Image (cartoon, rainbow, N blue to C red; front, side, top):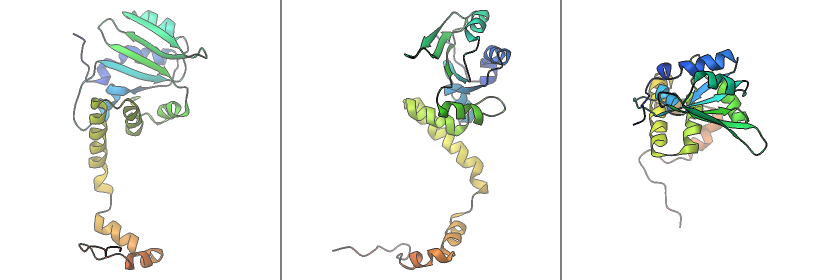
Length: 185
């Protein structure tokens, strides 16, 4: 049985040491990142990272003594991704930031190197498995509950929009709330 991970701080120390030794910019993505951004807990069986460049990663990973790892190559020869498994059985994927989105993930990570909620949602939309859909739902619920106290209430928002002169004429044409608009014939 594969080990289960539910705490990025305990799951990534050896990777953090490698990335910092190589002076690589990096971020946690995937399930471990989702755990940090969700309103409810969950666990994962792997770790996913995006890094700024490959550097001497192969050498550093070898020194970590993983059970196995391989650097996959794109048709143009660029390394993408690095896959492997640690001695304790944690599968890992390390992606080299090659497109603007991945570079933006590195720019918007938090102080703990966890990808932003928005970046995680984009990654989860690409995978779109049931667990990813649940992550999206939970992340959005958490984002909403953390920011709702700062948002204007519906009456405040409606008033602020309809009080502006440029919206007066549109507002006058709307039927009163709770009534149906006339059917077109």
